[in-house]
Amino acid sequence: MSMVQKVMAKFYREAAGDPSKLPWHREDPDNTLASAVRACAPGSRALDVGCGAGVFSVWMADQGLQVTGIDLFPEATAMAQKLAAGKPGRKLEFVTGDLFTYAPGQPFDRVCDSGCLHSLVGGSVPAYKQQLLSWLAPRGTYVLEHWGKRNAFDWRPIGPRRRSETAIQGIFAPELRAEESHSEDFQAPFPFGPWVRGVSYRMTRAV
Image (cartoon, rainbow, N blue to C red; front, side, top):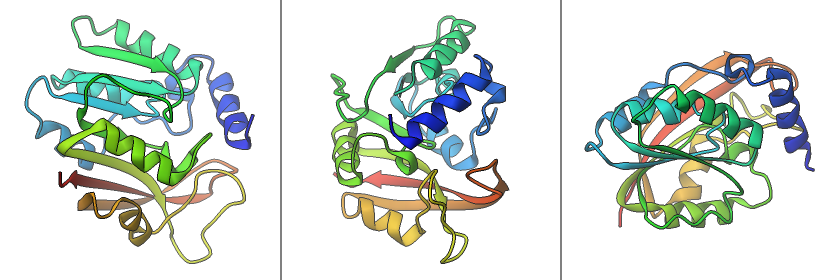
């Protein structure tokens, strides 16, 4: 088990099935994800990569999307399924598995990642990009939340990788074009904090 897996497993263990006890828990999506989802036609397909406790998966389903959430940790998808159980009639499914081997039968109109890329387990950034392109329909939208660099010395020996906006755009070019970005600094627990910069991106696939 990698260090990332050990740290994440510890957080899920300490949460004991309660999503609100996870240090990254938020009830509401940020404006970048909200605007991307609300621009979707009803019934559009969405993939929540690293869905965690499923809060954003359920929110997207509430907006009328068909949503699939995938996470490596069974504790996460168990929380997500429990949350979804309180939303009968929503088009929701959750998959416990490795994103690097996930192969859905159809592409998605929207793919969102609210913390997976910066903590990859078992694969590389180029492999992640290839998987993303295999999931995302032509002219589909990718929404990414990632930790940015507050300055040149902003890094930690463990925990989520911090990347500049230029680096993020370089990873996904030329297939995806950045349309919007928004950043906000916030406090985070040890060993990640005390302060981190969250940056959200909305990118469109050209073809």
